[in-house]
Length: 231
Image (cartoon, rainbow, N blue to C red; front, side):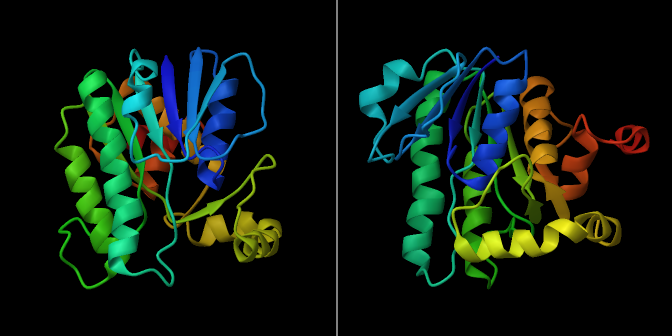
């Protein structure tokens, strides 16, 4: 499998990149972002581009891929709806529309969020824009498009958030994460679980296009036998 990864420098993207490099069935991973990753691996290729809204100059390098893991995203805190929509909706669709045209047999996997508004008309700004983005992606002519809606994500294996207060939160929660997972199983997931689930869905598909945390956990190779039977 050959995969494209947007957002490899972010926390979720770091986790996906790690698992892609470890997965023997993934032969090539093309990371596309604004800044160099500073990482070398025989399977890793990298395109650094300041303007991710315009991928026309690199179209020839985007052909022949089986899947795309789209992990780019920003917090809506202190952002206007217009600014948040530009990054969340416009940027995502600019990349997705190009990839759907170049690779119609591709699986497109999008990191959304717990609480996303599928109607695209609710009162909560970020949830409304995320819902509109999901709906637009599901209309594109991909072989498969899957919306992943994680809630709290616990970083593992050296994965780090770029946001200072997030790093503080993770440092506090990390020692008690097993307890948090036991008490709130449908609200939390690890970067490893999420990334492995995304790879599995890219490879085999999923029974439905929108995956909540319970669905993500069940389809992960790390799921228990009982969870897999439920899936």
